[in-house]
Length: 433
Ligand code: MCF
Ligand code: FE
Image (cartoon, rainbow, N blue to C red; front, side, top):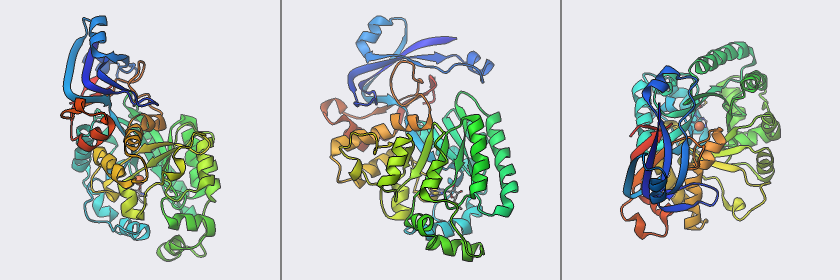
């Protein structure tokens, strides 16, 4: 059984291209009764948004809809955390920050400790997503340890089983482990859980292994994620075969005369036939890489706090400002990364940090861009019809109390400064909060 429900608030952020804000707005959406979701879990159509407009108009047009209105509040699509590693949620102080090489060395030395007994911290990280009004995540899973917890959580998840490994002698074993994890994720597929594939990065993945993995992804038509051009070391390695990664492979892994598996362009070319490609970080991408990414509709995911901690810099917005030609402006989404490279996985904190990390960009326009990155851009990157309040889109909606928001003409900015905890969260038309 489906019912019609109306939810309204003093300000509604549609999160469309022009960042439309509706005063005293409302959203009519479907909710699905339990018997339908449980009875036909794998086949049921999701709950959708039916209409968006002024709350009073919707009350008049749909008088029998159940309704709620939130004063002193902002209603918007539930937020999208496009890149998060739940498996590293145990970490607090185990890893070294300030230099990517020192961080990677510390991950290799300490990851086994961090990865043991993760269920409770994964549950806490999911609860934090809900409290932050996040309804959709791009979850990168290196081991599959977080799969059960995420698949039954009520969160909408694009679940990226990650491939990683550079030893040519181990490719068969690595690939069979990867296929087993991917197979398990396919068994969990549902309205809220979408299996997907991640290549860890150009430096950590043998190109033949990548080919096998991408063939699986192509057959299944899954989204693809990769960490890309995150550090100067990675760029130096891919361009010149020298620097930190030369030592990493020759000293740490005893590879004689190591060579990179890809050129920068060669890595990017692997994805031309895919629809949803998410390249995370891209801190050291230049104009030519931006052009390839934009022309192929690849998406960038930026994780500002992780970038500051591991690589001492942020994704540069300067060259994108004011450019209207889509040749050079890829879609940009926002993520927290994992606790492996962040203090926490709060997307609201990430948005605030980003606001303060881009002093070159005019403040109101930056606030709107950040909100779009954390809603429509993230959902578009992940290939999910959420992130915009529009009829036909998923009924994924969040409400935050922002005292006296009606007094402000800078609603996006004030939201980022003051949003603390979602008062209401709907995912697939179902009340989570
Ligand atoms: O995005 C950050 C930094 N770049 C690369 N990898 C990771 C990040 N956060 C967690 N990781 C994981 C990755 O999935 O750390 C391991 C992999 O499991 C690094 S490779 C030993
Ligand atoms: Fe990451």
